[in-house]
Image (cartoon, rainbow, N blue to C red; front, side, top):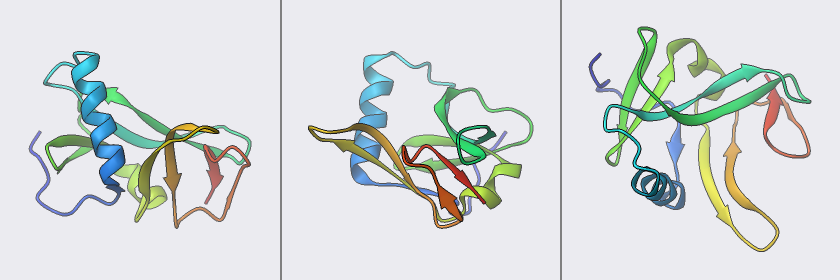
Length: 115
């Protein structure tokens, strides 16, 4: 599988990129793994986000985001087009957040949505 030359359908903020790179280094993520972002059925609003490290599969698109390999199933792009992933490191919350313009409604925890 080749890395796509077009622009990724989502973006990672500088804070999110730094955190992903830290995780890759701290957890010794293998070089043939990338950051998988997508959606799956479930969650209180109908769909929830996928975020984790994985190997690319046949139906995947691969993008390069500042040295991080982003892997996404082609079918998921319509649900996350224009989404921005950020990383919060505050007193009240720590973790990745999803700002998805495709979401018609979201849940209180911010990890699920309906499209």
